[in-house]
Length: 174
Image (tube, rainbow, N blue to C red; front, side, top):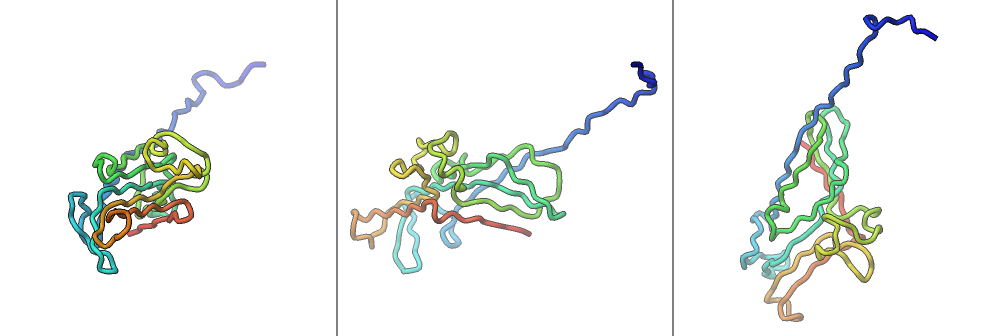
């Protein structure tokens, strides 16, 4: 069967290029209004106890960007481990972000239940990052360790580890 369309009459389809860009998120950790330092700087908790921080690590995951038109874009596979001792881990580089005006961001402080119960994984979720409970096959979502003269047990060492029952979705909009 022959077509009635001649080559000159055919419409050429031109692919539409989706415009996308990059986004860099810079993380800064604070204790009250002070930029966190792991150099022996003392901080005061609400009970009036002093403490220093020598380790801070946590998961920053499932990033969703809200557009000014009310739609949102969920960044695929956005799992980051923030480690205060590694400045490069506090710079999150996202690529392939669709063009638009963004007015908000949400993310999980922790690991979503699907990935948390999937066992040991790779990248930011690699058990070698010292954020995986080997005895219960789940992740430590937030880890703060340090010292306090008021901690009478464990030679003044303090440890605050948060697990899966406490993950939080953080939302920020302008």
